Length: 316
Image 1 (spheres, rainbow, N blue to C red):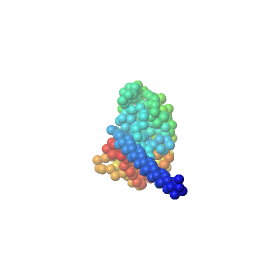
Image 2 (cartoon, rainbow, N blue to C red; image 1 turned 45 degrees about the horizontal axis):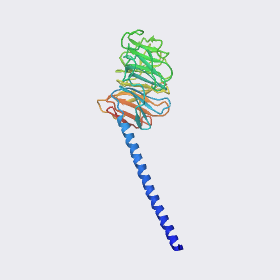
Image 3 (cartoon, rainbow, N blue to C red; image 1 turned 135 degrees about the vertical axis):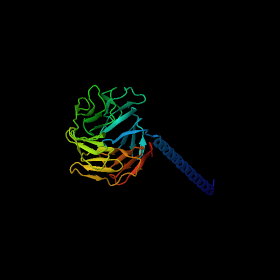
Image 4 (cartoon, helix red, strand yellow; image 1 turned 90 degrees about the horizontal axis):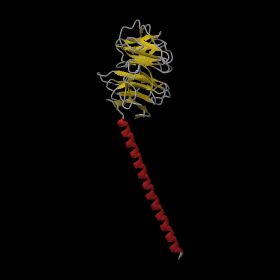
Protein backbone atom coordinates (compact mmCIF):
# COMPACT_ATOMS: atom_id res chain seq x y z
CA UNK A 1 0.00 0.00 0.00
CA UNK A 2 1.39 3.39 -0.93
CA UNK A 3 1.87 6.14 1.61
CA UNK A 4 -0.53 8.26 -0.46
CA UNK A 5 -3.30 5.67 -0.19
CA UNK A 6 -2.71 5.22 3.54
CA UNK A 7 -2.95 8.95 4.23
CA UNK A 8 -6.14 9.16 2.15
CA UNK A 9 -7.76 6.43 4.19
CA UNK A 10 -6.73 8.09 7.45
CA UNK A 11 -8.25 11.39 6.33
CA UNK A 12 -11.44 9.60 5.30
CA UNK A 13 -11.66 7.81 8.68
CA UNK A 14 -11.18 11.10 10.56
CA UNK A 15 -13.87 12.72 8.43
CA UNK A 16 -16.27 9.89 9.23
CA UNK A 17 -15.51 10.23 12.96
CA UNK A 18 -16.27 13.97 12.86
CA UNK A 19 -19.56 13.29 11.07
CA UNK A 20 -20.48 10.65 13.64
CA UNK A 21 -19.68 13.04 16.49
CA UNK A 22 -21.85 15.75 14.90
CA UNK A 23 -24.70 13.29 14.44
CA UNK A 24 -24.30 12.03 18.04
CA UNK A 25 -24.14 15.59 19.37
CA UNK A 26 -27.26 16.58 17.46
CA UNK A 27 -29.03 13.49 18.81
CA UNK A 28 -28.06 14.32 22.38
CA UNK A 29 -29.28 17.91 21.91
CA UNK A 30 -32.63 16.68 20.58
CA UNK A 31 -32.94 14.22 23.47
CA UNK A 32 -32.15 16.91 26.05
CA UNK A 33 -34.69 19.26 24.47
CA UNK A 34 -37.32 16.50 24.48
CA UNK A 35 -36.65 15.69 28.14
CA UNK A 36 -36.81 19.38 29.08
CA UNK A 37 -40.09 19.78 27.21
CA UNK A 38 -41.49 16.70 28.97
CA UNK A 39 -40.41 17.98 32.39
CA UNK A 40 -41.96 21.36 31.60
CA UNK A 41 -45.18 19.69 30.48
CA UNK A 42 -45.33 17.52 33.61
CA UNK A 43 -44.59 20.52 35.80
CA UNK A 44 -47.24 22.57 34.05
CA UNK A 45 -49.77 19.76 34.42
CA UNK A 46 -48.96 19.39 38.12
CA UNK A 47 -49.49 23.08 38.71
CA UNK A 48 -52.73 23.09 36.73
CA UNK A 49 -54.04 20.12 38.74
CA UNK A 50 -53.97 21.95 42.08
CA UNK A 51 -57.32 23.41 43.02
CA UNK A 52 -58.94 24.76 46.16
CA UNK A 53 -62.75 24.48 46.20
CA UNK A 54 -62.74 26.43 49.47
CA UNK A 55 -59.93 27.93 51.54
CA UNK A 56 -60.05 27.69 55.34
CA UNK A 57 -56.65 29.04 56.35
CA UNK A 58 -52.98 29.34 55.44
CA UNK A 59 -49.59 29.38 57.12
CA UNK A 60 -45.87 28.99 56.44
CA UNK A 61 -43.86 26.06 57.75
CA UNK A 62 -41.38 26.76 60.54
CA UNK A 63 -38.39 26.68 58.19
CA UNK A 64 -40.08 29.27 55.96
CA UNK A 65 -39.81 27.06 52.87
CA UNK A 66 -43.46 26.23 52.21
CA UNK A 67 -46.80 27.99 52.21
CA UNK A 68 -49.52 25.57 53.29
CA UNK A 69 -53.13 26.26 52.31
CA UNK A 70 -55.98 24.38 54.01
CA UNK A 71 -58.82 23.61 51.61
CA UNK A 72 -62.10 21.73 51.47
CA UNK A 73 -60.17 18.78 50.01
CA UNK A 74 -57.05 18.79 52.18
CA UNK A 75 -53.78 20.72 52.24
CA UNK A 76 -51.91 22.07 49.21
CA UNK A 77 -48.39 23.51 49.20
CA UNK A 78 -46.62 26.34 47.42
CA UNK A 79 -42.81 26.33 47.28
CA UNK A 80 -40.26 27.97 44.96
CA UNK A 81 -42.97 29.21 42.64
CA UNK A 82 -44.74 25.87 42.21
CA UNK A 83 -47.86 24.27 43.64
CA UNK A 84 -48.20 20.65 44.74
CA UNK A 85 -50.61 18.43 46.61
CA UNK A 86 -48.63 16.50 49.24
CA UNK A 87 -49.60 12.92 50.04
CA UNK A 88 -51.40 13.67 53.30
CA UNK A 89 -54.66 12.64 54.97
CA UNK A 90 -57.52 14.41 53.19
CA UNK A 91 -59.84 16.28 55.53
CA UNK A 92 -61.91 19.43 55.29
CA UNK A 93 -59.90 21.52 57.75
CA UNK A 94 -62.17 24.22 59.16
CA UNK A 95 -60.71 26.78 61.56
CA UNK A 96 -57.20 25.83 60.41
CA UNK A 97 -54.48 27.50 62.49
CA UNK A 98 -50.89 26.85 61.40
CA UNK A 99 -48.02 26.12 63.78
CA UNK A 100 -44.28 25.76 63.28
CA UNK A 101 -44.56 22.02 62.68
CA UNK A 102 -48.16 21.56 61.56
CA UNK A 103 -51.51 22.90 62.70
CA UNK A 104 -54.52 22.80 64.98
CA UNK A 105 -57.87 22.50 63.23
CA UNK A 106 -61.46 21.36 63.26
CA UNK A 107 -63.74 20.38 60.39
CA UNK A 108 -64.96 17.25 58.66
CA UNK A 109 -63.40 13.95 57.56
CA UNK A 110 -62.46 13.64 53.91
CA UNK A 111 -62.30 10.75 51.46
CA UNK A 112 -60.67 7.70 53.00
CA UNK A 113 -60.59 9.18 56.51
CA UNK A 114 -61.50 7.06 59.52
CA UNK A 115 -62.37 10.11 61.61
CA UNK A 116 -65.89 10.76 62.87
CA UNK A 117 -67.85 13.75 61.62
CA UNK A 118 -67.25 16.39 62.87
CA UNK A 119 -63.61 15.84 63.72
CA UNK A 120 -63.72 18.14 66.78
CA UNK A 121 -60.28 19.49 67.66
CA UNK A 122 -57.30 17.87 65.94
CA UNK A 123 -53.57 18.53 65.77
CA UNK A 124 -50.69 17.62 63.50
CA UNK A 125 -47.04 17.96 64.55
CA UNK A 126 -45.53 16.52 61.37
CA UNK A 127 -46.89 18.99 58.79
CA UNK A 128 -50.10 17.05 58.26
CA UNK A 129 -48.65 13.56 57.71
CA UNK A 130 -50.57 12.31 60.75
CA UNK A 131 -53.52 13.87 62.57
CA UNK A 132 -54.12 13.45 66.28
CA UNK A 133 -57.66 13.76 67.64
CA UNK A 134 -57.68 15.76 70.88
CA UNK A 135 -61.26 16.43 71.94
CA UNK A 136 -64.87 16.87 70.81
CA UNK A 137 -64.75 14.15 68.13
CA UNK A 138 -68.27 13.72 66.75
CA UNK A 139 -69.47 16.75 68.73
CA UNK A 140 -68.31 20.13 67.47
CA UNK A 141 -67.01 21.81 64.32
CA UNK A 142 -65.15 24.95 65.40
CA UNK A 143 -65.23 27.42 62.52
CA UNK A 144 -63.73 30.22 64.62
CA UNK A 145 -60.57 29.18 66.44
CA UNK A 146 -56.90 30.06 66.71
CA UNK A 147 -53.66 28.64 68.08
CA UNK A 148 -50.22 29.91 68.99
CA UNK A 149 -47.59 29.38 66.29
CA UNK A 150 -45.27 28.07 69.01
CA UNK A 151 -46.50 26.10 72.00
CA UNK A 152 -49.84 24.57 72.96
CA UNK A 153 -52.30 27.47 73.33
CA UNK A 154 -55.69 27.15 71.62
CA UNK A 155 -58.73 29.46 71.65
CA UNK A 156 -62.14 28.44 70.30
CA UNK A 157 -65.48 30.15 69.89
CA UNK A 158 -67.82 27.32 70.83
CA UNK A 159 -71.11 27.58 68.91
CA UNK A 160 -73.19 25.34 71.21
CA UNK A 161 -73.02 23.19 74.31
CA UNK A 162 -70.85 20.08 74.06
CA UNK A 163 -69.52 17.59 76.60
CA UNK A 164 -67.02 20.07 78.09
CA UNK A 165 -67.77 23.61 76.93
CA UNK A 166 -70.68 26.01 77.15
CA UNK A 167 -71.26 28.40 74.25
CA UNK A 168 -68.74 31.24 74.04
CA UNK A 169 -65.00 31.88 74.03
CA UNK A 170 -62.73 29.31 75.68
CA UNK A 171 -58.98 28.70 75.83
CA UNK A 172 -56.62 25.84 76.58
CA UNK A 173 -52.95 26.02 77.55
CA UNK A 174 -52.25 22.32 77.07
CA UNK A 175 -53.24 21.69 73.45
CA UNK A 176 -56.94 21.20 74.14
CA UNK A 177 -56.95 18.82 77.07
CA UNK A 178 -58.18 21.27 79.72
CA UNK A 179 -60.22 24.42 79.20
CA UNK A 180 -61.13 27.74 80.79
CA UNK A 181 -63.90 30.08 79.69
CA UNK A 182 -63.09 33.70 78.84
CA UNK A 183 -65.45 36.36 80.15
CA UNK A 184 -65.02 38.44 76.94
CA UNK A 185 -65.99 41.63 78.75
CA UNK A 186 -65.89 44.66 76.45
CA UNK A 187 -66.38 42.66 73.27
CA UNK A 188 -69.19 44.41 71.41
CA UNK A 189 -69.17 42.56 68.07
CA UNK A 190 -69.20 38.92 66.99
CA UNK A 191 -65.76 37.50 66.18
CA UNK A 192 -65.17 36.05 62.72
CA UNK A 193 -61.49 35.10 63.24
CA UNK A 194 -59.18 34.52 66.20
CA UNK A 195 -55.42 35.17 66.27
CA UNK A 196 -53.28 33.98 69.19
CA UNK A 197 -49.89 35.48 70.00
CA UNK A 198 -47.12 33.02 69.02
CA UNK A 199 -45.51 32.88 72.49
CA UNK A 200 -47.71 34.81 74.94
CA UNK A 201 -50.84 32.71 75.62
CA UNK A 202 -52.66 35.57 77.38
CA UNK A 203 -52.62 37.74 74.25
CA UNK A 204 -55.46 37.12 71.80
CA UNK A 205 -56.92 39.25 68.99
CA UNK A 206 -60.32 39.04 67.30
CA UNK A 207 -61.45 40.16 63.86
CA UNK A 208 -64.98 41.61 63.90
CA UNK A 209 -67.28 43.80 61.83
CA UNK A 210 -66.36 46.65 64.18
CA UNK A 211 -62.58 46.22 63.90
CA UNK A 212 -59.86 44.46 65.89
CA UNK A 213 -60.44 43.66 69.56
CA UNK A 214 -57.42 42.84 71.69
CA UNK A 215 -57.08 41.12 75.08
CA UNK A 216 -53.99 40.59 77.22
CA UNK A 217 -55.71 38.60 79.97
CA UNK A 218 -56.79 35.39 78.21
CA UNK A 219 -59.86 36.98 76.66
CA UNK A 220 -61.45 38.06 79.90
CA UNK A 221 -61.46 41.76 78.92
CA UNK A 222 -61.21 43.22 75.43
CA UNK A 223 -60.57 46.70 74.10
CA UNK A 224 -60.99 47.90 70.54
CA UNK A 225 -57.51 48.27 69.06
CA UNK A 226 -58.33 49.74 65.63
CA UNK A 227 -60.75 52.16 64.01
CA UNK A 228 -60.23 50.98 60.43
CA UNK A 229 -63.73 49.53 60.11
CA UNK A 230 -64.70 45.93 59.51
CA UNK A 231 -61.94 43.32 59.62
CA UNK A 232 -62.22 39.93 57.89
CA UNK A 233 -58.67 38.59 58.31
CA UNK A 234 -56.17 38.68 61.15
CA UNK A 235 -52.82 37.04 62.01
CA UNK A 236 -49.97 37.54 64.43
CA UNK A 237 -46.48 37.66 62.98
CA UNK A 238 -44.62 34.56 64.26
CA UNK A 239 -41.89 36.99 65.41
CA UNK A 240 -44.43 38.30 67.92
CA UNK A 241 -43.98 42.03 67.34
CA UNK A 242 -46.99 42.87 65.19
CA UNK A 243 -50.47 41.91 64.10
CA UNK A 244 -51.56 41.99 60.44
CA UNK A 245 -55.22 42.50 59.60
CA UNK A 246 -57.54 43.81 56.93
CA UNK A 247 -60.62 43.50 54.76
CA UNK A 248 -60.03 45.16 51.39
CA UNK A 249 -56.74 46.72 52.52
CA UNK A 250 -53.95 45.37 54.72
CA UNK A 251 -52.72 46.99 57.94
CA UNK A 252 -50.20 46.20 60.65
CA UNK A 253 -50.66 46.87 64.36
CA UNK A 254 -47.46 47.44 66.32
CA UNK A 255 -47.76 45.71 69.68
CA UNK A 256 -45.19 48.01 71.28
CA UNK A 257 -46.64 51.35 70.21
CA UNK A 258 -50.29 50.37 69.78
CA UNK A 259 -50.32 52.13 66.39
CA UNK A 260 -51.87 50.86 63.17
CA UNK A 261 -50.45 51.66 59.73
CA UNK A 262 -51.23 50.37 56.24
CA UNK A 263 -48.82 47.95 54.65
CA UNK A 264 -46.84 49.40 51.72
CA UNK A 265 -49.43 47.96 49.32
CA UNK A 266 -52.39 45.60 49.10
CA UNK A 267 -53.18 43.19 46.24
CA UNK A 268 -55.56 44.72 43.72
CA UNK A 269 -58.84 42.94 44.39
CA UNK A 270 -62.24 43.89 43.01
CA UNK A 271 -64.89 45.62 45.09
CA UNK A 272 -66.86 42.41 45.64
CA UNK A 273 -63.94 40.61 47.31
CA UNK A 274 -62.45 40.74 50.79
CA UNK A 275 -59.23 39.29 52.18
CA UNK A 276 -60.02 36.15 54.17
CA UNK A 277 -56.66 34.77 55.31
CA UNK A 278 -53.10 36.00 55.85
CA UNK A 279 -49.91 33.92 55.96
CA UNK A 280 -46.69 35.36 57.44
CA UNK A 281 -43.30 33.73 56.90
CA UNK A 282 -41.42 33.22 60.21
CA UNK A 283 -37.99 33.46 58.51
CA UNK A 284 -38.24 35.94 55.62
CA UNK A 285 -40.33 38.99 54.64
CA UNK A 286 -42.69 36.85 52.57
CA UNK A 287 -46.44 37.20 52.96
CA UNK A 288 -49.45 35.53 51.36
CA UNK A 289 -53.16 36.31 51.32
CA UNK A 290 -56.30 34.66 50.00
CA UNK A 291 -59.60 36.30 49.14
CA UNK A 292 -63.28 35.44 49.28
CA UNK A 293 -63.13 34.53 45.56
CA UNK A 294 -60.28 32.06 46.27
CA UNK A 295 -57.66 34.26 44.66
CA UNK A 296 -54.19 34.06 46.20
CA UNK A 297 -51.35 36.58 46.20
CA UNK A 298 -47.72 36.32 47.29
CA UNK A 299 -45.27 39.01 48.35
CA UNK A 300 -41.50 38.46 48.61
CA UNK A 301 -40.83 41.90 50.06
CA UNK A 302 -43.11 42.45 53.02
CA UNK A 303 -46.05 43.77 51.02
CA UNK A 304 -44.19 46.17 48.73
CA UNK A 305 -45.27 44.16 45.68
CA UNK A 306 -47.65 41.26 45.11
CA UNK A 307 -47.78 38.41 42.58
CA UNK A 308 -50.95 36.40 41.87
CA UNK A 309 -50.38 32.67 42.49
CA UNK A 310 -53.97 31.48 42.37
CA UNK A 311 -57.24 32.63 40.81
CA UNK A 312 -60.83 31.49 41.27
CA UNK A 313 -59.77 28.39 43.17
CA UNK A 314 -57.07 27.28 40.71
CA UNK A 315 -53.30 27.51 40.92
CA UNK A 316 -51.33 29.79 38.61
